Image 1: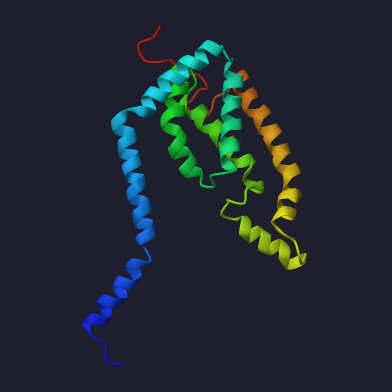
Image 2: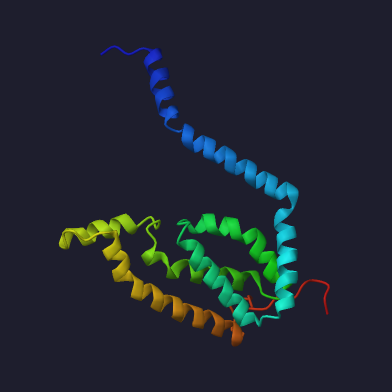
Length: 189
């Protein structure tokens, strides 16, 4: 078969045509991130959120438990952990730093909440794989059956994770080497 340079250009063009949806989404997302940074909306939301939470006078264990609940809830509609963290971190981390919670503890609370609802979210990247494995041994096993089978585990993980995270903050245990639960803003006594 005799191929010319035109065939190579045609194949490259066809390959790039399938990428057009991704390129458009990346373009829109990049503009959103740039406008979010330019407008300082994340900083404004963090300062206003910290001021509102400070008025509620929530103890740190309850505040961190609320982050676990928030992450677990969002995990049901957004499957990617990095997408959730990319969306929440620019607001959550500085907001909680203003309230005396370290970025490391905020990250730990987010990871706990993100992990506990993974077994029951159909948006988890491995959910179809688990479903196929289940259908291999139980014909007719569907998505609802898998969620129903995993729900008790997810609820158990959620309760234990919530108590463990709140207890970690209550006991003021170190989060890692040189990382504490609390955070003191520079320049404050």
